Length: 289
Image (tube, rainbow, N blue to C red; front, side, top):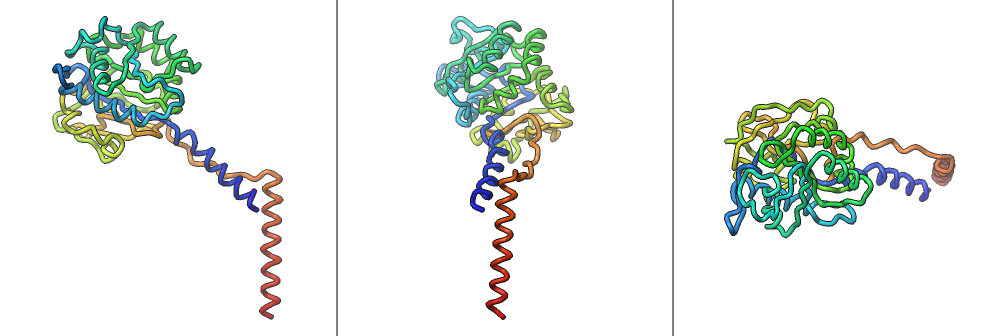
């Protein structure tokens, strides 16, 4: 009987292990990477949002053997990155916020380079802590060919998150997201002025504030099927403005846990347990008689 119970417990653990090990995600309709700067001492406006988002993401990454870096997909490396402390640069908008939390940034530019890098992610050769999609709302950002490369490797991005990696994304075409969450709609209208975090957003990312997410305009909201993503913030009209979740987030809706089935040993154990229960019941009745 004890072995039978152990089998049931292990079935439950296996069913939930993938979700439990998945990473944190922040997918926004914002271009806050285009509305911030490094003042010389601190990140301001939209870059403070990025700093806080990265800090929360990194703290929840569970990917085994990750190297702690943040990799921007679709932005040319500035030489040096420190030379771009102001807006309008997708790589610089990651470099300075990451610097504030003592993290290193690598920027990958060009469709072929993105495909090669994500091929390394798929093989395990590349193990960053966070992947960052700079979108198309900032200078030095994702072009059409790079967007296509990301979409072709969308399954690798999903697997990276499922294995505990973090993901941060800003407004863009989001064709890779549509590939991962069929039925999601990327809407072109957004009102950031009175945007607010949802309870889920506050719980998942406690250091991100309403002031952070309203530090600049937004350009996308999300509707339709959200898959396994939650609404982390809503814009002034109540539309979903930022999606994602803390550790354990997946793109697909989690299927119900499977009902454990019994092999022949489990059936034998169950039969013996029932027989023993019946025998005890009979002895109890005889004793009372």
